[in-house]
Length: 231
Image (cartoon, rainbow, N blue to C red; front, side, top):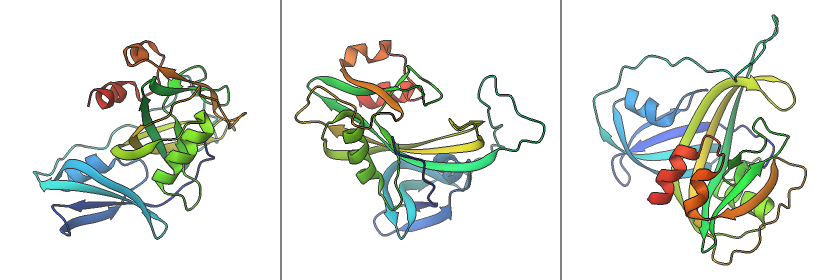
């Protein structure tokens, strides 16, 4: 998994080819779909996630809708978080790419290492974007670093976000905004997985039969992964 890297994010809404109807910077902690709904746009699907001139553009196909009026959500904190009297969380936005990688051997899952906040739990291969790197390039790099596998023709599935206050592995208190670009990808020539990025956030990696994925101790991708695999 790559070191965290922050990049400005722009949300672009279009009602058809060449019919851009809205564009705005994604604020810290905000979710693109909820922000579009607040501005009167119902999301049909996400069309692309590309790095354009140093800005991550998330482009959505939308339809006009009644604007939502939901209030601001409370920002959750890590369980058991202890904050010093003089501590203030540092805002940090991290964009990452992940893959729902499948093959004839099953679904590729990675086990989080002791360097993470959830050691022993399983997640999708992926990680933070390097400076100047596109989500698609990051996906290919991360899958190789964490499993030694190559994938073909990734397709954009979804962009998900999370916002919470917690501690980084370094101990720094962070107001953390995670933006995750998720792809579906096929591995045509699966091999026995091997972690190349030794000493990082990945402790181990393996192919898991589809019917056994639900028995794994998954991270926050668990609910969505079932949907993505059935789609």
